[in-house]
Length: 109
Image (cartoon, rainbow, N blue to C red; front, side):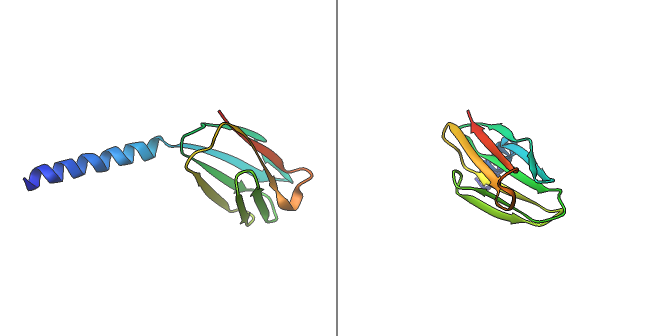
């Protein structure tokens, strides 16, 4: 009986790791007052991770009122933001320190 329980626990662990490994991951880079890319398509209704990388010489503040996210990221640093899911739509984000030039969108489809 213990062997069966251990086997079931092992199968559940492997399945959980496989599901986590399949989660979508996206990356944006902030540099010279701009984001690259400026628009990213993400899966609607599914979890995903967004990595924000600051390759600039000054701190940035990734902010999105649409996504209810705000993070200050030091020069040369990065930060990952995990999303459980988004409804279909377009979600705007900016570098609050450089709003005139550093803007972008996540488009959930």
